[in-house]
Amino acid sequence: MLCDDVRRVVYFFLDGSMGDRKQSEFRSHLDDCPDCETRTAAHRRLREFIRKRLSPIGAPEHLKIRLSASLHVSAE
Amino acid sequence: MKSAEVQEHEQGWDFERAAMPYVDSLYNTAYRMTRNSEDAEDLVQETYLKAYKYYDKFEEGTNFKAWLFKIMKNTFINNYRKKKLTPHKIDFSEIEESYERVIQKNAPDLIRDPESEIFQDMMDADVKRALDSLPHDYKMVVLLADIEGFSYKEIAEILDCPVGTVMSRLYRGRKMLERTLLDYARKYGYIRGEAEPAKMRSRKDETKGRKKKDDAKPEEGEAVEPDDNEEEVLFAGADDEEFEFEVEDEEDEQFEIE
Ligand SMILES: [Zn+2]
Image 1 (cartoon, rainbow over the protein chains, first blue to last red):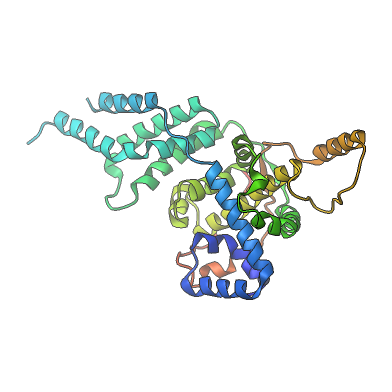
Image 2: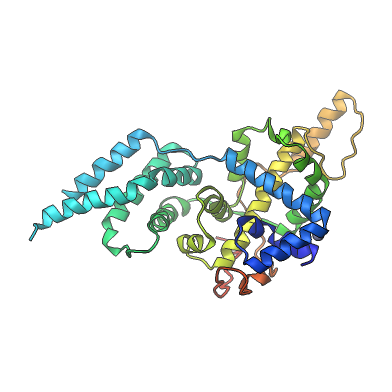
């Protein structure tokens, strides 16, 4: 894997969605290439930050009650 | 033999038991899609009523959560999307190039600081704004993958598009989102922008300089769509058997403009 390949698939590496062989090729590139290692870590950090800050907003209670009621009305 | 009424009544409970656990997830995505709680509530309610109506069409053993999301996505398109959206085109390769320079320059700082001090002052509202600035299709894949945790395959099913399209939108959507966040971080003065040597300026100059910079930027929240004439083979490796998902034929509606 070359630097360009690594940059192209970095998100899929972080998703763990590449096969084992690709995943380990990626890792061994990082072992030899501090630049890509740093960038991969930066992407990981950004992604953690985004996930943390976009934490789910739950449905309001009144909606749950409304849904439940409407399902039973339409069932009768 | 049960009466039809009793059967229907039982189906109501059955559906409720199956579907209610996903109400928070659906609402969360609905809220991010519609950007306001009233529309989000209506969208979720309509989704539930439709799903209930077609419950007998749901195939046992397939992914119920994905099925609900798919109904919601279709409902959203029918109700809300037709009206608006005159998307502006953006040149993704330009975005990518400038992003490359910014990340290259700032990656060491981003990882050095263990508490992400860079982002400490960034507000949830900033992140929300950054997400909203993504073109709708890109925002959807980012939400479904990164917030709801769906697999590429499930997203492809929900959005009715090939897995390769999901991957390509995910790649671009995440990049655009990261770039916007880094842009905010630069505005707050945490990181360096591109080719901006730090220099002493009088306060007056600084305000002037900043204003100019802001003017040059695209409007926040503006719907932008990548150029449709790009034919980058982004994921040539995707049909490699080493990838664990299948990539269907690229129907290349990939960068279509609505
Ligand atoms: Zn490298």
